[in-house]
Amino acid sequence: MSRSKRKWDHIQYALATGQSLKTGFDCVSFVHQSLPNTKVDEIDLQTKIGELSCSSPIFINAMTGGGGERTIDINRDLARAAKETGVAIAVGSQMSAIKDANERDSYKIVRVENPHGLIFANLGSEATVEQAKTAVDMVEANAMQIHLNVVQELTMPEGDRDFTEALKRIEKIVQGIDVPVIVKEVGFGMSNETVSALQSVGVSIVDVGGFGGTNFSRIENERRKRLLSFFDDWGIPTAASIVEARTNHKNITVLASGGIKSSLDIAKSIALGANAAGMAGYLLKVLIEQGYHQLIEEIHYIHDELKYIMSALGANNIDELQNAPVVLTGEVHHWLNERNIKTSIYSTRKMK
Image (cartoon, rainbow, N blue to C red):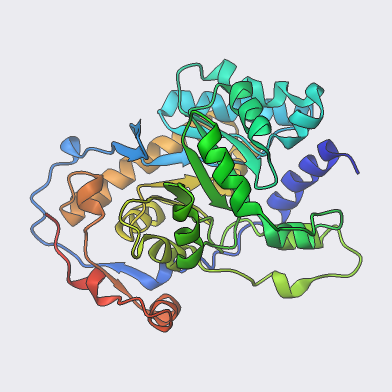
């Protein structure tokens, strides 16, 4: 099967399988503030991803590219929406375009439509430094995403089976390109140990890509004769993974993704330690089912709702929201305690 056909299959299966919604955000509750002393019009949504300044804590996460005309249309609309709403955007894996120059237009369209916006290039951990440079140049990227997708590859009938030396390749890319490197999971979550290993080779931005969103095991199992169904429930819930990534890593920028579908999910992600939150499957569904104009309206709604939530909490900016007290219960509380991560620090802290 061609990469182009597989890319389009992924879109179709992603829409069909939906999101598991087992993110763990239902185990996170804000401590209500009756005297917030805030004003909605003065809430500041600016944040930073590493050294990159962002007007919004939302970004459109990697979805597609390399699927021919159909993905050109999708990426055109996503890029236009990013420009209109002031959010950053990541393209899907560019390996197909590196192997086949005919696929490059489906990625380049993002920069054409969004000439001054923040754009993230994207490749897998198998990439070389030269391939990373090509991917960055292709979309004039402000940052480079390197995705980790071991479980997806194992479930994919034609997927990779050799995952040795990935950390060394990432280190070479960090040292060999001129833009920040973001290492991201693709729906199975990132552990404390993984973040420590990445930090040891110079990575300063991670995207946890937690369990609970688009399930690439389920997608690839749709393409198998003999199912590897044990991978369908494999992973660290997004809420727990954000805390894992933040714990003991003060100098790391944490990005949240994996089943994020609302302003409340974004607010909880930031309160758990994220600097920004990526949305992919949810926004793709809005675009495909309701159209471009509704996608823009939805992002505007999310921005407005996030300001309302921050106002209710007494958080005037993203830094203050990161210190809003939250109570962790249920499976997330159990997970973190079993991982020897003290949860009471989240419920007893105060905003500065």
